[in-house]
Structures are given as structure tokens and as C-alpha cells.
Image (cartoon, rainbow, N blue to C red; front, top):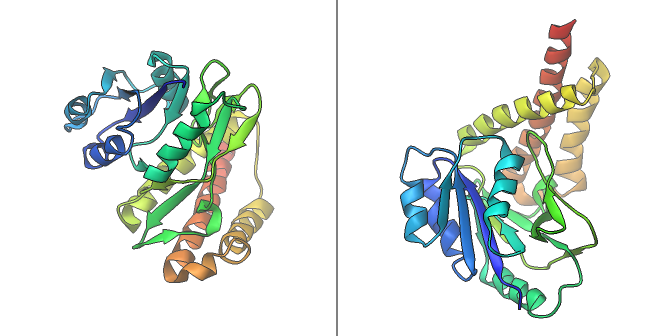
Length: 250
């Protein structure tokens, strides 16, 4: 049975890291790359037996690829500090790897807990993420934000889920949106994309309709409405910041 290395990147994640590492304590190895935490993230990680390396921040993809490069095993499970691997998912991963895996990577559904409930709708669910992969055939693509693993070969889909605890509250949600939309707009701008008043009006509107109606946010009550509105606001802010960049250049 191939062994599994868990890879995590952190910065000031003391509030989350214990639960995250506890959920992967079954793995053969845990590698954690920290970007200079000023809290006790590193000490907590080491208390779980993790191999910890402190490295200056070079971007999400670069940090995750570096963490995978430190692993002793080819099969890597990448998680974030605000995620938890369920017992059922751990069992499914072990079963997949018990025999010769038929794919070079596996997407894992993810469910988020926010505003007092699990969100089983909107763009947040099932939100499959390619997190289990053979590092000989895959690596994280270079993106400023919303990075993903690209695998040379076929990709499978697991059934069990990763639990995600992305935000402490609405204020934290807004802070994250502000940061990520800046990175996303910069990526779009550097990729040569430009925007217009039509996109500023239509894209956020459709994002809300997609999240709240087409993807069932309405079923999750007020939290579903808030998440749908926040996802729409994300799109608006990303496009507005792209417009700001292109307007500044002109």
C-alpha cells in the first residue's frame, strides 16, 4: 500500500492547526511549510510530529509545491489549516491506495460550515477539489489565488468530504473577499483580460442568480442568501478592481 504524506501551508493558524492535524493523524507523514507565523502555529505543529519548515511567502502555489517536494512519499494529500479530513474520507483514501490506484489524482468534495450551519448549496457545494495526487504526475499551477493541482493523467472523484471552516464571521468573510479579489484582479489583468460596464452589471447579477436559484442557496435559508450575496459581491469587486487596474494604466 503506497504511503501518504499530508502537506499543509500555514501562517498564524494556531486557532485551526490542531484540529486540522488531528484529522490527518492517520497519515504516514505530515509536512508543514510555515510562512513566519508570530503565534504558536509552529510549536503546535511540531507537537503533532509534523516536519516543519519555515519559508518566506512566495505565493500559494509556490508554497504548496515546495511542501510537496519535501514529502518522503509520492502520494500527497494537501489540506488547508481550516479544513478537516473526516474519518469516512480517511477510510476511503486508505481503500483507494490499498490497491494500485487507477488515477494519478483524485478530487474530493468539500462542504463548508458558515453562519451556524453546513452550506449544502451555492458555488460552495459540492466544490470538488483535487487534493490527493501522485506528485510524480502533478503539481500546483502558478496562480495568485484559487490555485489548483494539474495532473498528467486521469483524475478520479472520491465520495466522502473534506470539512471546511473558512470564516470566523461575516467580517472575516469580507476581509478575505477583499484580499482574494485583489489577487484575482491582478491575475486577470496580467493575463490580458479587460472588463466593461456590461460585465460589471451582468456578471455579479448572474452570479447571484446562479448561487441562490440555480444552485439552491434558497434552500439554506438566510445563510444561503448571505453566501449567495457574498459570492455575487466577490464577482463585482473582482471586476471593479480589474477595471481600476486597466483605467489606471490608461
